[in-house]
Length: 105
Image 1 (cartoon, rainbow, N blue to C red):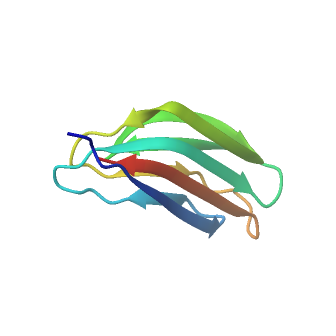
Image 2: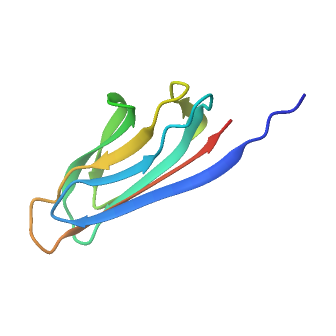
């Protein structure tokens, strides 16, 4: 029997506030994060995290703009939400954007 994979994209943008892109938990489904991208409207360096519910499973710094693919995916615990969290820019008027893409099965 073949598995059905459903693709999704979540996004958020904030002005000097934490930007969080979240894919909601679904009973009996596993989410797999396939990529994350983050950017700021001007050059700044801030922390980007991927979370399995509330547990950080990956983190790195974003300088201005990053697009990070995960060729093998990051598997999220069954029935849990996943999110990408971009730290606030630290300067009013500087917009932070984050996009999280993945599949569910």
